[in-house]
Amino acid sequence: MAKLLIKNGRYINPKTNTDENLDVLIENGKIVDLKKEIKVSDSTETIDANGKWVVPGLLDIHCHLRDPGFPEKETIESGTKAAAAGGFTSICPMANTKPVIDNAALIEYVQKTNEKIGCVNIFQIASVSKGLKQEELSPLEELKSAGAIGFSDDGRPIENLKLLRHALEYAKMLDANIVSHAEDSVLCCGGAVHEGFWSYKLGIPGIPSSSEAVCVSREIELVRQTKGKIHFAHISTKEAVKLIKAAKQEGLNITAEVTPHHIVLTDECLQDYNPNKKMNPPLRSEEDRKSLIEGVVDGTLDTFATDHAPHTNEEKSRSMMEAPFGIIGFETAIPLYMEIFYHSGKLTPIEFIKRLTTNPAKVMGIPRGSISIGDIADITIIDPEKTWKFDSSKSFSKSRNTPFHKRDLKGKAVYTIVSGKVVYKD
Image 1 (spheres, helix red, strand yellow):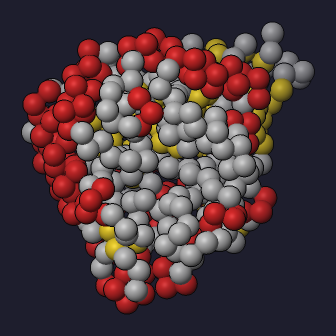
Image 2: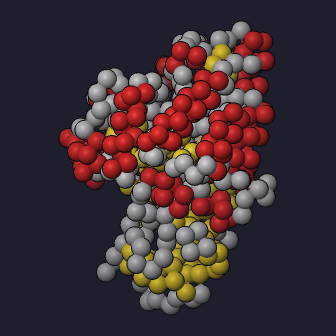
Image 3: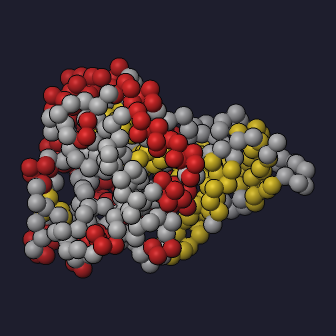
């Protein structure tokens, strides 16, 4: 019987509101004991977690693995290794692969491939519409039965509002979430960065904040009509935060996430014209950034996510206008979030970890996010004080598109454990 003992760590479990020094004993992939001091035989594998946080395995409910279809950017093997290095034990990849994940066979392909060469749990998000064409709904019930955890056409907004209405109604019957890429494609058409002072000064066509706010507003109205539920991905504007806050106060079934780059960077950093700072939604203003931080602290924005979006060096070597949107994010997410929310004192450790575990698990209905006796032993051990420098050339991802290369960071996942097995060790 395989045993693993984690000793001397600061055990933080938001689900039980526990924050105390406890040992954790794992046997056959499950947690079997939690005590101040657990004694085992000398032959039991032991991890000394002194000075470190022992927390539920982190969940990322928004990422892109590019598999199937784009092995030059990422594979399930490389992507899950990068996720593990970032402390994530469970991830939810989006459906905008090639072919689009809009049928049960492709869900099965991802699951079987992950069983063979992956190292973390994959809870696949399937497409809302067939082929992302927004003409016909994907077979949502079939996809849910095959293992899809939710539905999204992420990468593009659903502007066929009749189809979105039907998706919300259907997903409600399945108790599943629709994940929204909130953007008006006409308003943002041709833009590469946030529309504002810096887009005008740099001479780069901009994407206005209204492109996000207009979409959030109309989708909230559909939730009000259908009584369905929507999760807003990668919120970036103060206007959207206000709309979501009001909708939640009304009691609508709405959740939302933020990404590290939107709470760390602003459009002012685009002065070097670096395409690795081009993402969608774009880096916004300092006022937007502060609003996002306030939205996390007051609970308007429920979860942290990465929006890990790998692209090749060749693609990201193009001009700001020609390069694709997106950056990698698994390995830098924890320290960037800690910089803004923990090291600054804005969130307690329990509140911080909640946004990476119990909250995303609840949003997407994932059976993870806790480490109590009897639970599957998905555990992340974090050293909150570890200082390090991110070198993108050593990333586990196949891609290198990041604005955080050589950035000094504080806080790191040092062990990632999936079903009792160590899949990453710093």
